[in-house]
Length: 208
Length: 206
Image (cartoon, rainbow over all chains, first blue to last red; front, side, top):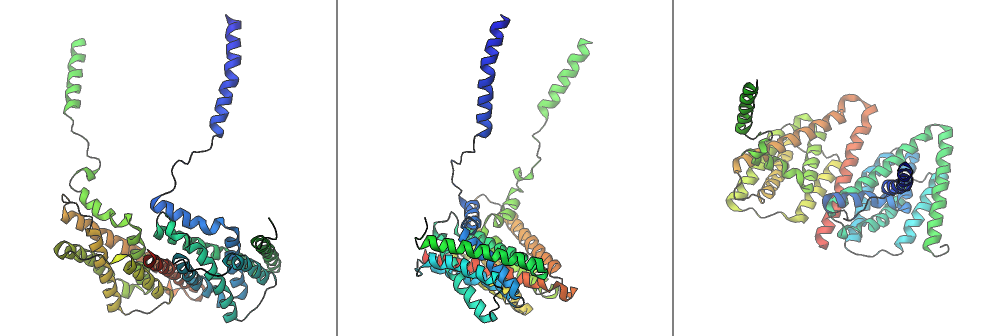
């Protein structure tokens, strides 16, 4: 009886453990897509964050603004979302822009290079460069808006995420106060430019 | 012993049977319509963005100009509610709402010095349109007085708190070291204007 009992236990225990491990490791099932205000807000918030080319370009804008100092450091966060929204409107209205993916990849390359080289353009010239890129980035985000679960929530999420990426860049840019921080930022600019170069090559079909 | 226990048991059972249902939440009473009025605008993102923009704009202009909105804004909501019930005010439409978001955001981003009378007129106009929009969802059994009180209370609380928080954040007398706070509020205006601009585009596209 005892022997039979121990055999049964030795068979059941591994199966029980296997079932337990399978249960613990099971990922949650997403049977329902995000809907309503929550879904729109989430997709808007994640859209600028899930595209690496968008994300690094936005952070680079903030860093470059911090490097350029006053007035770029405060004009940028006030006007950039608005200029980007103009591009967003073009995207919503389905007005095509030429070579949008190429320009978006190019923006990361050029902005990264500007940060790496501490490029000191006159304020107006820097503003024009950033504004052109902002329109192309906004166009890509705006094209997604009509299909969002809640367009207003998507707009709120996308603008907030973009603004926070700029703030992130400006916060990183404050490291320029220290010589070591300046070198670190220039290194970051090199990485951003390299990633931009990779995305550009990918867009042009040079790499897989 | 058994007799005493039996008597006690019957007494307890009688008390339990007679106990009325606990009214822990007064939503179950007629006051529920008050909460319906108070919560209705907070469930609509359009209202939240517009109220927030108006409150931050008024707060950024200082206490002397903004304090009038504590009274004007709830009264405007009530006026909108009444006008919609009496005359059926037509909806402003998504393009107009988006245009108002854009205009408020631009005024905030530009740090425009708006005169008190104009600020009050803008707040009253906005409140009338939002009051009318909230009245559209009246059910036939809704207690209108309680709903209106709830809506006006929510408007009063939202606009007062937003203005107070903006004023406390801005601290205009704190000196040059705090100038970045004013810039942060203007950047927030840029965000609101961007949202409004995109929604204007969406309204024309759809």
